Structure formats: C-alpha cells, structure tokens
Length: 177
Image (cartoon, rainbow, N blue to C red; front, side):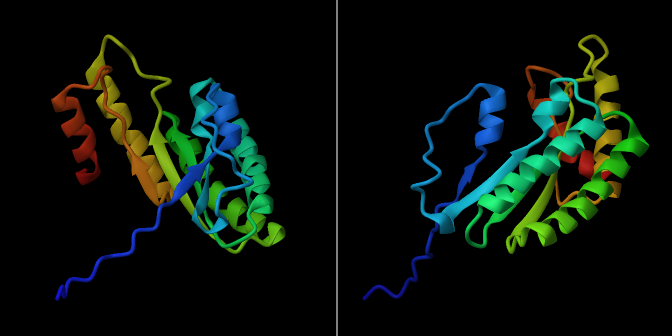
C-alpha cells in the first residue's frame, strides 16, 4: 500500500472580538461554541496606535484587553499581542520591554498557562505621502526598535501605498540590516 504518512492538520482559529468591535468588523465567529483547543486569541493593539493613541495608552489598553482573553481562556491556548512600532525610537524600545515584563506578570495573576507571542508591526500613522524614501528609513528604525525591544515577530509594512513590487521587496529585506 501507501507508505506515505499524512500530516495531521489542525485548524487554528484566531479570534479578537474586542478588536473586531473597535474596527467595526463583526465576522460572526461564535466564540462560545468553538472547540476550545483550536481557538487562539489575538490582541490587535496596533489599531489604537493607528487611531492616534500614545504608546502609554496603547500599552495600558493592551494589558486590559489581554487580561480579558487570559481569564476567558479555559485551556492552554496561544495569545498573540500585536503592538505598533512608532517613530519614537527609545520609547518604543521601552514599550516592548515593558510589555514583555507586564504580560509575564499578568499571566501569573490570571493563572494563564498558554503561550504569549509578542508581535510588532511598523506604523503607517506617520507615513508621509510625498517623501516615500523617508518612510523607508522610518521603517528601518521602527524594525530596529522592535528587535531591541524583544519582539518575537516583526511585520514591516511597505513604505508606499499602494505597495509596488519594489516596496514589498524592500520591506522583506529590511531585516538584513
């Protein structure tokens, strides 16, 4: 017969009801009736930054948002925290370092047994439309701030909107610097 082993594919659902409410999107995912082993939570705190929130407000809101998901999680699950990286280099490094420490302490208080992934996403809030190459330099600085802050995952946005092939290539290669 067939000697190939079929890998088991487990579907992982990400849900963020609070973020969906803030962005005005309601996907219709029924959190209560979803199989808990496949449900992971995502805190999209970058939405607050993109709306103009200061780093302190973004961090404070993220913590309260994450605490709600930690308390709601009934089994081991994954919690992904997505924070924006702004143009203020040292405050952004401090924000990510503080986020890691505070999330660790919050997990202890909430008795959360799952894993926490800290993601960084470069901000498009400060992107200029005329001098696009300055945006490229900003993205590089933002990426470095996320690295020094201890982010697990970094998403670097293209420096122009709509993204061209060259802009996508540069965004993919900034991490080499």
